[in-house]
Figure 1 (cartoon, rainbow, N blue to C red):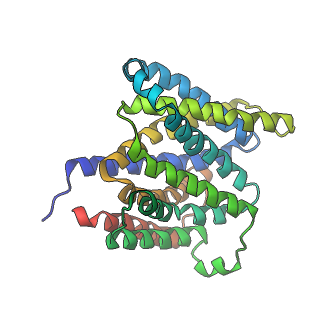
Figure 2: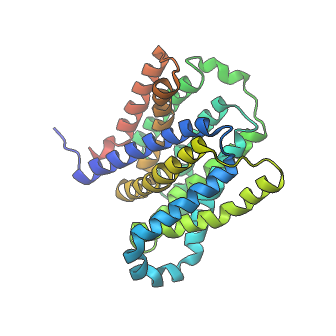
Figure 3: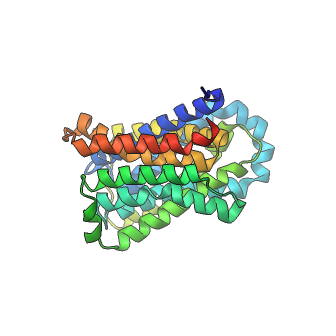
Length: 298
């Protein structure tokens, strides 16, 4: 019987935990409505995350400062686009399209990773990875359409959908270009990227304030902000980056499709939504797809 490489097993754990925290972020977004506006939430969460990371990473930052200066452009682009702009566009897309459309479009992230890996690095997806992605995509579609995949035929592409496609492309590029991370500690990298995300998010928050659309956080808003800063913004990003470093973005990218499944479970537990049979079928398909996409190394 074949054995799972210990480092691969660690990567699977990290990427699964990442998916769980990102699913929690989606639920937190529901709790944020009416308690903190989306662009301000993005700005606050990266500001808090940067402050926490700076203290945590200080010894590594001192050691890596020369490398950070040499690669300042790369670090800023990764943080500004992959962390700040992606989140802002994600929240903005939800103002123009349905949550069903967003869930379906988000499930195409691994496909974006496959295509970008091939375009930039000539890395081809294996048949197992493509098969695994297909299974996870079917599972996500079942979840997003509430067990009625024929509903896809009644959906129209709109401005929000286009924003989401752009956002997915941005985060797909971020995931692919993590392979080009300079030689530095992961905490140094994430702190620099988080600071870049904070800077890049400020114009969006400023526009929200100037347009009179800002909602300053109340107690619940601050609770959501702190959760997103510590969980999705710090731990999930560290886990995602380390997991992709171990097994590669083609294999690891499939874990994105676990997010909607975890979100459905959390919605049942935290929001009182009903668990349906199609949720169970979808979960089985998604996890089977993730397993299949790793099969060539087991």
